[in-house]
Length: 191
Ligand SMILES: [Zn+2]
Image (tube, rainbow, N blue to C red; front, side):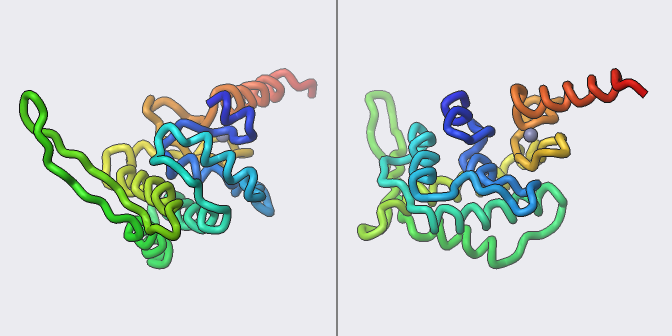
């Protein structure tokens, strides 16, 4: 989280798909893109490396295209509406570009299943994109979808999964604090 914030990404540590959706600040008009160039895009991917297959990391264009589809689907989920078929198709195209194989292997006391993913030889970065797309699938079909929220700060559009049901803000150190300070100011403002 601290490393991500130091790199300019306020929200981190959410499911991969939510972290990617949070790289655009849609409450600003026009939206503020936290992935404005290839260099920043590579930095964002490298911050996620602990939960991704080995690189190379995807370039900017397919990253922001996937982000757009994910953001549309997540925003629709929060509103209780249905996203466009195009967004769902885009997501499914991304997962379809990776082949996965499940193998049965013996262990000293029984069996284990080993899943391997294989991306296309000419675009190995598809593995990382598919991992993000799959995290959206897992989120939407699992119980966590009911805990998907948008930050309650009016100045913020970040999404997060509330593991604690009382959580209202994307970040304690940014949004919860800012809202507390604003409330304090309004209460103590001279008439
Ligand atoms: Zn926030």
